[in-house]
Length: 115
Length: 114
Image (cartoon, rainbow over all chains, first blue to last red; front, side, top):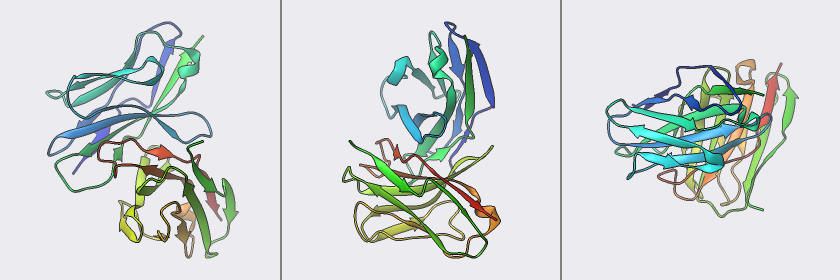
């Protein structure tokens, strides 16, 4: 079975400070990992993904994520937060070694960036 | 503009009254899927389709039906809605069966069943 945990319901950070949104995963094989962002009253938008290769993945809007196989983590980071980054963030995983054709999403983390 | 379009965006209905939520994509994607979003639970997959006439159950298919007669359309049918189907629903599509490709989401359909 594949699963994702986002341990924080909400993360608060001041504008200009670095931000981290945490994600840990569990798969029996090798993972495909994704981050999505949801703005109010909108659908989810793709931010970045890890398939293979470099552990540090860069994505949209200045976000990046680091794949850590030993800690089974894929934390989302940004060096300097903007108020406009305030949104709901979802981590998702797919086990690439199974035939299951679905992403499993975490419960989401609300990021609040204060001016 | 590449997009996934859902209708209706908002719907209030009563228990037992059949309804359909439509989903259409203009990107010629083979893979389409329906999710429901509930607070604290994230997104859970209801059904997915790898191509025309090919559909399969996701994690929470009970009480739902789907069909894929055309590549661009993937309607979600609630034959006899119940209050526990009150939720925010998202349709999504992808080029590669979500193997490595990202999902493109519609803007959501908020359903309330009284």
